[in-house]
Structures are given as C-alpha cells and as structure tokens.
Length: 334
DNA sequence: TGAATTTGACCACT
DNA sequence: AGTGGTCAAATTCA
Image 1 (cartoon, rainbow, N blue to C red):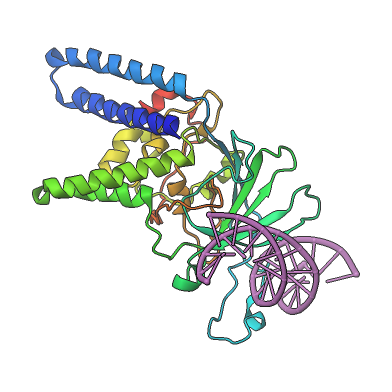
Image 2: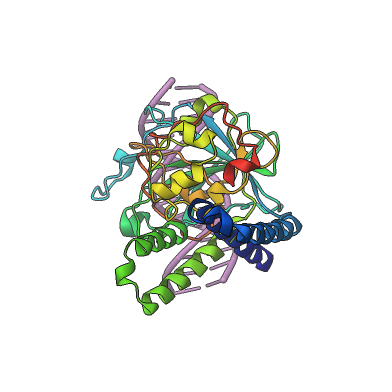
C-alpha cells in the first residue's frame, strides 16, 4: 500500500514534470532552454524510480464486445411485490463491454473500482468454471442508484476477472478521481477566487484521490482486443481531438487545450507498455461512460469500497482513434 | 446489532 | 425446458 502510494506520487511528479517541460518547450526562447536538460534528468530519475517500484501493478485487459445485454430492470419501489416488475433480461440493444482484470494477488476481489457494491447473488454459469457474482450499488435503496456489475473469473486464466458494468451510478458516492481532478481543474480556471484555505482543501482531496488511486493499482493497463470496436471501449470523449493530433504526438496538448486534464487521470496519459494496444487508463474514465439504460463499462474493481467519480464524458464519441496509432510508442505520451 | 454475504427459489427470456 | 438474473430469508461478519 505504501509502495503504491509512493508509486503514485512518483507518477504524479513525472506527469507534472512532463507538462512543465512541454510548457517550457512552447514558451521559452531557445536560448533559455538549458533548463530542459535538467527537467529531462528529473524525468529520468522518475523513470528509474518507477521502474524499480512498478512491479506489483494490476493488469487490466478490456475485452470489448458488441454482444447485447439487457436493460436495467425497471424497479418499482412502490410496488409491494417487486417480483411482479423486476425480473427482465436479455432484451435490450445495449452495448456490452467487459473488463478483464488481472490481479497481482490471488485474492478473489483483486480490483477496486471505487464504488460501494453489495453482492446480491451468485450463479453458476453454463460453460464457465467459476460462478458469476452479481453486485449492485450499496446505495440502491437509499439513493435509488441503479448501477450493477457482474464479476466472473475467466475460464482461461483464473487470475483474470471479467467485470461487466450495467447502469450508471446516480448515488452521491463522491469520486476520488473525478471530484478531485475536476475540482482542481475548476480551481485552475478561477484563479481569481483562489484562497490558501481552498487550496488546502484541494490538496487534501488530491491526497485522497491519490490514495484511492493507489488502492486501485498503479500498473493498470487496458488491452483492446478488438480495435474495430474501440469506440465501444471509449464510447465518448469529453473533448474533440483530431486523430492527427494524436498521431503527431500533441495529444497531451490537446488534452490541455480542451481542459480535461482535470477530468482525466494522469494515468490515462501514462506511457504505454511495449505491447501493442495497451495503454494505461484510470477506471474513473471508464466508469463515466454512458449509455442509455445499459451502461456496461469496465473497471478494475474489488467488490469493496472506494468511490470513484461520476464523470460525465458523454461526448467521448467525438474522439476518433487512428487504428494505426502507435499506442506502444512511449513518445506518444511525452 | 446492523450490515454484508450466501444461497435456494422464483421469474423472465429464449 | 434450460439458462441467467434477482429476490429474500438465513447466515456470517465486524
């Protein structure tokens, strides 16, 4: 845990340093850019430290699919007999996405998506060696939150958990990630109202977010097994980014220009691994994906607590990924 | 003792 | 009829 926190601190520092370097690149005259050498040294130190520490992370693989999942059951809480209205399934045209979460630990609940879930059922699934667990938001009754998820071990690899999300959180579980980063972002937009007290509050929140993030695992990776369906993996993006921007390496600037750095975790723009189509991603982004009634999103999760945000990046579909985009190119993120 | 989990039964869908 | 999703009583846990 402490190691994960350290890892996150290092990553935070690395990201900020990267941004600083880019800023200097853009705004400093070439004669004053000797400082960039120092920044690059700092980055090198970060990389070394991270490479030493980064060995216990979770590995998350998304396995997007277009199979349909049913709509969320409509619940009539006023009905004395909920069974009359509750059990519906397999009818919707919803999109299905599932995460494949690999845990570095043998625990049954290897992943934590930041929400409070309560298990309400478990079923043996035909053709599957492991039962499927059914979870719903803890605040289902208190706040009417309809988010549910299904967790099942993979047949192929029991260390991999396939997680399906349905519905959307409407509860007041505050998002460590979203709330924090959005708040920071908002604050940066309103520097005129900035106060030391407010800054302290933000720092506290940021610490909380980082802790939550570390509980989530710092080495999370997402694998898109079907690039043709990448729009289903990332059905929406909160900002219009031309693929050309992505290709020419200005994606980070694009993020900044569209003011989403406050909304997207730094993990999202972390370096990709050497394996093609892998890239780091924060669960908060995925959790914020919207669909109509069925919202199948993926996140590394345990069935335990740790709030995540209810980021609304409903316009994510404006983003077009270049199929040939080299996600395995670390320079993309720098 | 309240909250969370387990588990058998019920129900909808195919 | 088979299968998957949910309910809710019983049980376990903190």
